[in-house]
Length: 204
Image 1 (tube, rainbow, N blue to C red):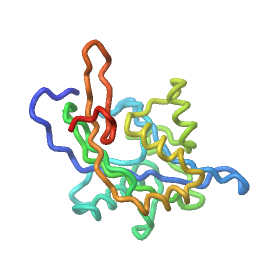
Image 2 (tube, rainbow, N blue to C red; image 1 turned 60 degrees about the horizontal axis):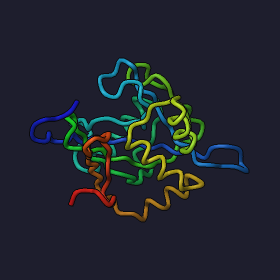
Image 3 (cartoon, rainbow, N blue to C red; image 1 turned 45 degrees about the horizontal axis):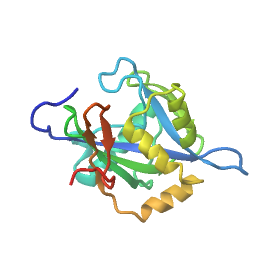
Image 4 (cartoon, rainbow, N blue to C red; image 1 turned 180 degrees about the vertical axis):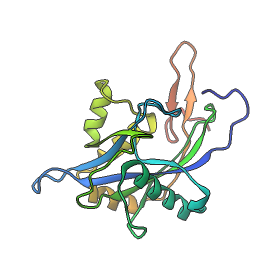
């Protein structure tokens, strides 16, 4: 829903972008786990997402709490348990645009899937689970087979730059996490569009 008043305070949230080594031993391309949200969901019904959700008080605070939240949501929504000691690499941090009423400050962590861990949607929040190569998910969006949010599409394009999950994990271990606050621009006579920090027309 649009927001016509002062910006609301974003709610902390966290997700796991779970990667696995897909294909045969001779072709181990990067694949990512995605879940389809229930059509009954109030927020993004029917949209394909990474496992995640809002921070609970029991998760704790700051980055340790966000990591605990991401692991809890992965277990609840996809039935995959990661040990607390498993590596979670900060990937992206998205803050919902100020023109949206319901806002999140969402951290996304890269993690490697444990062996022999088929996802199990919970049947309430999530109804389907699939492993996608990033380009295949984007092509499915173009074909109208799946619905993806703008941040999800952007993250899939970034992951598509890597041949394997190990390459992606290694690359983001070396990067500093910077928050991304998209801005919606409505040019006269044109459809609204989203711009990101670094784009030429991002507001100063």
